[in-house]
Picture: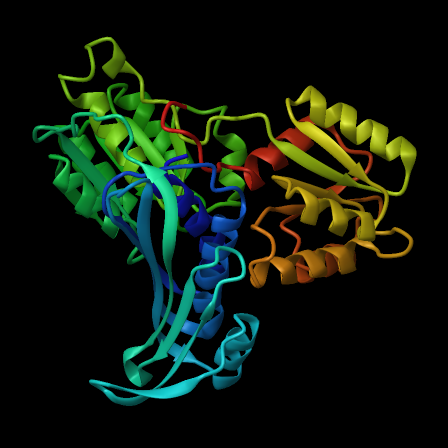
Length: 426
């Protein structure tokens, strides 16, 4: 598994929470490629706890997720991950995050004067977590440590050689790192704040080869489809936040729908697609396969009804998923701690521990880094607005009514499982 892909997926897990709070989020990953030696789920769990921590510190403002890595030496590489932010925060929220990270603040002398500082071990990775409160300048939570890694096989860095790319983003921060990386890869980049302005420029010509649009209000897809129909040579990419309803359409439309943030490897694959050294005239007619190519994934079905277990297992296996079953919330917690799944399909009304309480426990374990993040979708016969709100309040990502329709289940899986880290050969 390549490190930048794992870090990108960690940022994707947290982006929806930042977007719901109205935070501007920026993403960057610097350093060489690293091929990790079987990191398991807990490196991602450690990253998740600090990225989520900085988002939970702020009510409004700006947050940044960045990673720096060093080349491997004798099979080990150093990593430093920074989750930083500035804006409006409440002391109670910051204290709550520190308690969750098991950090006790102390004062140390920095250039800005005496500022709260805290340091402690990361229970998920064994690395070091640091917290610095620089007052009006912002907050930083960092994770540092070492990972077992090697250099991936050597490949030429692709070069777009001045090929035109257009970026469209109404939201600040959504595509800034994309613009920087595309320029470094040789693209000639033009940015627009509104899709309508890009459409007018497209009509005036000449058209770019690549157009990346950050989803904002959810109505961008129809206009992009019209553009692709009018300009078949245009490679249109709609970049959405994980969990967007638009992801349900990604296999049914000519627009390439991908998940923010776009990873460094993903942008290199975009560039290799147009680099004459690495592509042919025939291969340039279609976009490269996305990095969220469907793999065999593991879904935990939690239900106390044997018939429901059998039906859910059959539907999920028909869709290509590996399935494990738990009969109540307590079994679900044990199963997730033994082997974290890629998703949980959770019944709500169960004995011993119901689905709402189990979901709250799972989210608590993810916040402190005991478990890596994964989506939880409710599956229940009680389809009411009150029940839906209760599921969302418990930390669930979606809601399905029983009996489940196979197509509806497939669409929900596409929405909440848009991608996870994949190997560079995928």
